[in-house]
Length: 351
Image (cartoon, rainbow, N blue to C red):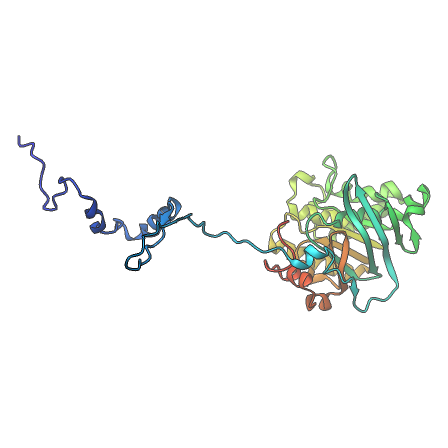
């Protein structure tokens, strides 16, 4: 048997000389669709290479080329905003557009800190009576802390919170308890009792805070469940409901006491875009039928465009700008414009 290596005509078994490396043709993938993968792999394992040789003048000593480090792709480095470096409240003009009373809720120079972490830092905010207002702002800027001050779960370190003309921090416990009955609250996850079916969850505030009989309670609960489209699910338990159904059930329970003020703490959290749009539509319909002051805490700009009549933008514990939704969406303020359009370029960064 002939064991002599087969000569393919390209002398591939001949030892290669250094100058032969310049003549090697570029690799071609067996599958043309793999070309992008090969180029990507080449970029991934790219080593530092010598800078291109520069022509040397006659008689001059050659200068050694300096190797440049490889460059990473896709890295965007934004320069710090000089205005924010000079003043962290440079964009907080505190402007309010056409804001006149009466007000359902007012924050007056409110400060609140948890240890060394300052959350609200001189907050001035007015929520108009009888409208759907939204408080928008980046995460961790104090939106949920605002809600807890409204219902007296937290009290300011400095300043005052006024609800329906009453100073919340100054109220005796009995009066504070009565004031809370004027609120309805829809929490992020609905906050339903897992051991109760849907009907009993919605009936709970009526049984707890009123002397109404079961027949009257049934009429109220059925009316609210019908408003949110949950009559067929009245005997189901929370673990048998979808996320959207739990949100609607939470809204029905928030409304059973006919509150003057309804608070929504990120009602669109965990919902897909279609169910978020349906929930916004439901909020509009219920508000049109029942009236009252609705206050929505959210990050969702599309929700704000759908239902907000009044918007307050909160950042770093203070109001940047507030007023009618139309004015805010046309604001020239760089921060407001960036946040309400979701652009990457602007004062707000990843810090």
